[in-house]
Amino acid sequence: MIFSIIRQQLSGSINISLPFIIFYYFAPQYALSFAGITVYSLLVGLYIAYVVYITTRNQAKSFLFIPTDDRKKQFDNEISRCGLDLKDVTIRYAYVDDAVALTFFNTIAVDPMVWSSIQEDPEALKAREVVEKYVIPSVPENKKELHNAISSNLSLAAQKFIFRHELAHIFYNYSTKRIVITGIMAAIAALAALFFAYKVIPILGGFFTLVACICLGALIDLLLGYAVNYFFKSYEEKRADIFATRFSSKEEIKAAADFFENYEQAAQRYRKTIDSKIFSLPATIYGGYIDGITRAHYLREFAQLK
Image (tube, one colour):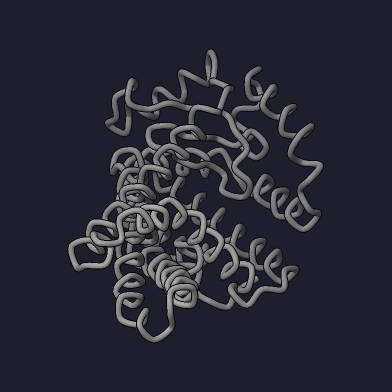
């Protein structure tokens, strides 16, 4: 799997580099200078941030199933209870693989395949039908086992906690910060790769310098991605947990701790079925999330303070 990640990084670097390679071709006198490299790198960062913004926005807009009646009222009550304005939060039913729920700007996608509290909502049933018809047939058996484990352990109390956790991502503008950081990462990777190219082009020539530049940029972007997972994303995840504990009872926090612990055990069984060296890294590095055992531990500590 590590080779597929490297391949993906290289492919992504090549794709995003094409318009700027063209720019270099038409304006070489500006490109091959300190000012040109700096401006180019900033353009790369802005371009990547814009692409991620559009992708995230379109993904949120693609969710079609809206909570109705009593379930909508329950969601609205939770939103108000956590201090957010109803007009600032959008709820949709959508399949999110093994994430249980995900936030896209101000839209929270709740997975109808695992949330038992929404099963009486006609819109949730419609969402389930679509997922079962078009998505589930392509899901491998080991992933289906993980989904079943999630569904069986996701109690009503844990669902309330997780929903508040997602509300925290809206409250703290997580999606916007992630896009800004992604743009900064791209700019840094481009800057480093271009300065490297500026130094070695007399030695390697144009073609080999281009290849080396793309490879170096992809490597730096990958390493920066892991660093951002560890220092930013995992921090935001714990911050969202702390937010959720403020509005949750002791019993709800303990229920969430039990869920995350059981989830981690199921996830570990799933990872054993996949031949990948990347899972030997801490979860905070390769995924940016806190492993369920650690999460359960500090949540139980928070519960004792209630």
